[in-house]
Every structure is written in structure tokens, then in C-alpha cells.
Length: 161
Image (cartoon, rainbow, N blue to C red):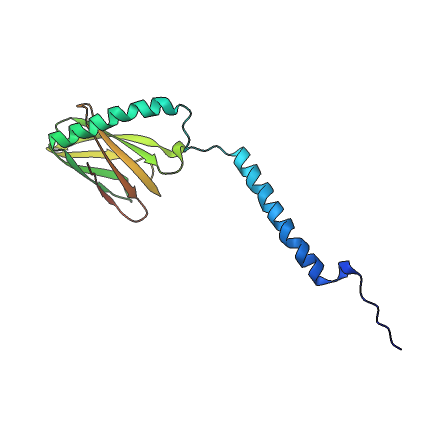
């Protein structure tokens, strides 16, 4: 009569495998809760009521650009950081562009375009763009154009109305 002694449970593979599945999900949940509590969301506005009221001004500015027939095309030079803006029907001596990063508001910045000749403007970037940006082009005359660019893929942007 031969008897084999079964090894104790903690020396076998399957109990540890079965325990590891719920243990790993608990570990992932703890990491996610920590990340949620210790990071801020830039997508949520603190004062959403004022943001909602400001949308009327933006709509008015975009309608003004459409009424004036303003169009613009932006070209970027990645090596020099030069921005060249070609426009139609823009008469201002200066135009301002707000570059708003799609995910991180701390990266947002604005540049001022100076008129170099009829319907041509120039500005200089301090550092190269990387990622997806929402670009808002505005004038002192009360109009606004907007566009979105992935600077990793494209080096130009046609502003739409």
C-alpha cells in the first residue's frame, strides 16, 4: 500500500493563480482612486455659468467674421518657429491667436501677429508646437476664427467659420 502525501495548498500553483485575479483588480482600483484624488481635471470649469454666458460673445464674434468674409490660412515652420498668416479681408494691424492645448490648459499661450504686408501677418513661437491645439484667431475689430491642428502631422491650418 503506497500513500502519497498531497502537498500543502500554499505550495500549489492554482490557489495562488485564483487569488491573484481579485488581488490585482483591487490593486488597480487603489491606484485609480489615488490618481483621481491627486490630479486636477482641466476639462472641468470652476465657474461654468460665466463660461456659458461668454458663449454668446463668441458666437457674435464668429458671425461678424462670416459677415465680413474673413478667411485665414496659417503656416508654421517647425525649424525656426515662424508663423505666417495669410488672410482675406482682414484690415487690422495686429491679430492675436490663442493656442489652447486640447488636454492640458497649463500649456495654453497666445501670440500676436504683426502685419508685414497686405493680408499677410507674421509671428514667432518661443518653442515648437507638439500635439493637438485649438487655435482662436481674434482681431480688435470684434471678429474671431477658430481651427484645430495636430502639429505632429500638419504644418498648416485653414481657419473655418
